[in-house]
Amino acid sequence: MSPRMSRVVALVALVGLTLAGCRLPGGAPSGPSYRVRVEFADVLDLVPQAAVKVNDVTVGSVTDISLRGWSAIVTVAVADSVVLPANASATIDQTSLLGEKFVALAVPAGAPATDRLADGDLIPLARTGRTVEVEEVLSALGLLLSGGGLGQLKTINQELTTALSGRESAVKDTLHQLDVFLAGLDQEKAEIVGAIDALDRFSAHLDAQRATIGHAVDALAPGLTVLAQQREDLTKALTALSQLSTVGTNVIDQSRAATEASLHALGPILDQLVRAGDNLPKSLDFLLSYPFPPATTGAVVGNQVRLHATLDLDGAAILSNLLTAPAGPGAGTPPVVPPPPTVPLPKLPPVPPLPLPTGLPVPLPTVTLTPTPLPTVLCQLLPLGC
Image 1 (tube, rainbow, N blue to C red):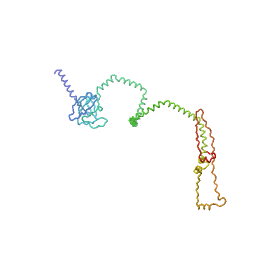
Image 2: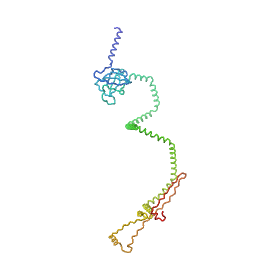
Image 3: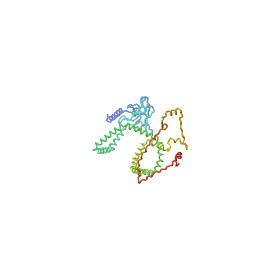
């Protein structure tokens, strides 16, 4: 065999071995199946007849790939024996670093399964994704190695070394305090969450009352306009009020000694009033009906005095009184009633005059006395008349 023929045979054998070692995409499932549509933002180099796997087990294949708007719709056929939840997720993965693409179906992580994925269902774009391509990784690594970020990282490292040099203890203490602070925050997590929830409820209440708050703000506009117009008058009033406090302080300071003396002088007067007791109200009661006692005011009607007498004409009582009366001189003399005791009025101590402060415009109050007519009975009894 010639050398050229030997090379051709070796090449054919190598291609055969390569095809034998490669796994070609499988077709549709052999048994009954149901079809599901999956929406992807990017299908990369996914092709029809690609495998569909669940937990790395082939359960179906891709039957169609179409474009809808800016998204790709991939139709897959899944064997009827495979039970998936209605909220299943889908991703485009690779069998190896340079292997073929396939569609991986899985139960959503962190969410409970709901119902069952049925024929004709759609897995939306929110539950689909894809893995990172080798080309993307190499491109990002090439961008980093070609000066895109290593120079900046070196500068940042040098600056951090210079800034922290000699301050290691302070930085360590800062990190320790930060750790204590974060631990405190972690212990107060429930309270912080409760405060955020309360703030959320308060914000929701404010949002529900938005129209009322808007009306209230609109109603404040005229009042604010009036306040703005009266700003000068309000300023003058506040200035005058500050001056009034100064004048009041001066008056109190200048009249303090006289006020204290008046209060000290009132002490003996109050003591004597306490000693007078009930005599003072009784005297005032008799003074209002002078010269008659208070009991006679009900008997005076106009110019006449009514007299009401009750006579006890019981003969037995009269005879008993005559028989039991003591004999002898002065037996018929009525008993002598002692005069009522007289209560001396206390002498009032002199009250020193109150000095008025000088240099201040303090107006004296004026009192108008209204003449009050005396009762008719007193007018007739008094010699001077009314």
